[in-house]
Amino acid sequence: MKLKGRNKVSPDFSMSSMTDIVFLLLIFFMLTANSPNALDLLLPKAKGKSTNTQNVSVSIDKNLQYFVNNERINGDYIEIELKKALKGQDKPTIILRAEESVAIKEAVNVMDIANRNNFKVILAVRPN
Image 1 (cartoon, rainbow, N blue to C red):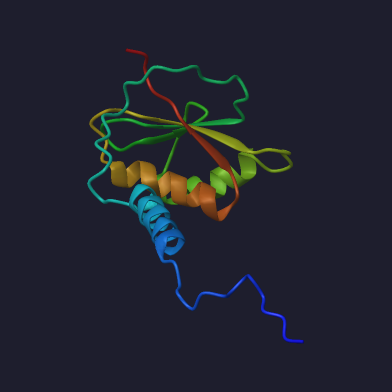
Image 2 (tube, rainbow, N blue to C red):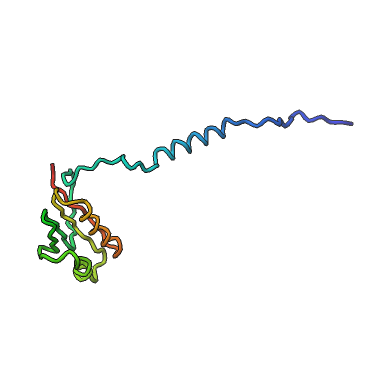
């Protein structure tokens, strides 16, 4: 006795689910891709709330003079001063205050020092 099965396997492959996945991946990568011209930052004005967990304050004035906790220091020795000031802190935090006319290069220099030493940096801005 020969029995025939009612369910037959179709050799066709449905591409609809594959195109859905490709479409979702395309949208994901378009949204997460970094575009160099995506941010137009106008600092230092901002709305927001600053925290009171200040450990060390670094200020840069328009004459490119550096101040750590209101004491003027040479820009070449800022890393040494920050290490001394933040030694023994659980969560070392730097509040960075830079005037509007200061080049971003100077602020990035302080941020780079903080990054190398695992310090947290908060950029201080004035309210609108």
